Image (tube, rainbow, N blue to C red; front, top):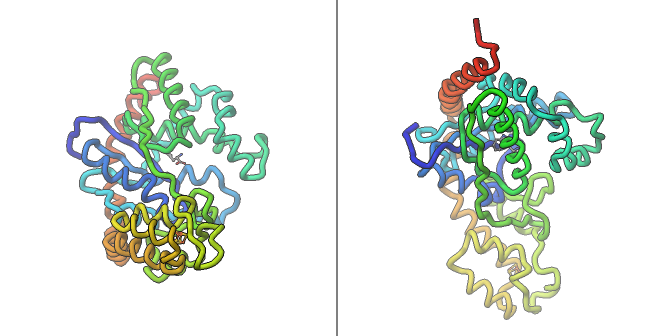
Length: 336
Ligand code: TRP
Ligand code: SF4
């Protein structure tokens, strides 16, 4: 990793299948760009994925997801030559640090995190019945960040509460044992809200309103055919309202040069929604073409992918081992 002036980035994504357009526009493109200015550590957080486990089958799906997300990352331009790209569980030191940090983390902090309460509700569980691991989710996330001595964490607004806990844990640790870690800062980037094909929810896999990055051109066109448009445009001869149409908002990303045409033709009813969607499919397919090609190429060489992740784990491990030694010394549990 070359020395870059702006500091060290850490960010993670839970493996839950293939990534979609929303992930690309909302996070991944930003992560790719950050590689120019920062030392970047990007982690597929498979242990975090286990915090909401309900059965053994699901656990085995996580491994397949790890591969899919790694393919998406590399195809999108995360660069193993410049950044550390690895799988969380491949560097088990994070679990050691998680345990040690859990000793300085008041339970009340964790129980109050809004994302914890949301998760409990989503899972149809109670605060008593969810796993101990889920309560400790932000502690594990803190361990991720500080194990690699990162100071900057690009995340969405939904992660701000976790970053606040990370800062508090670091403050507490430093107060108790002496200055060891920098307080990590959340880096909130202006990312567009990408609405899904249902026309009103954020694009997400769980809502099944998404288009996968890895979709074929035909799948892309077929998915778009099912998408909602302006709900008040019932007949082809009705003028449409691009400003409330989800297809129009996707044109902004994938057909930026044609926006005015789309707008004018829609509002004058000279363009129908079927054609408009085909036009969007072309834009998406053209713009994702190179990514999809790189992805297919990598998918055809699983040994290459394995090697890249092993190399990332090795680089991550070197940093992690040093941090753990330092932490053990601070705590007075140094290796004899
Ligand atoms: N909790 C994050 C999410 O759900 C994923 C994550 C795990 C993460 N560890 C992290 C993000 C460390 C940033 C830094 O999106
Ligand atoms: Fe939306 Fe395009 Fe139909 Fe207008 S023509 S309502 S922008 S899909």
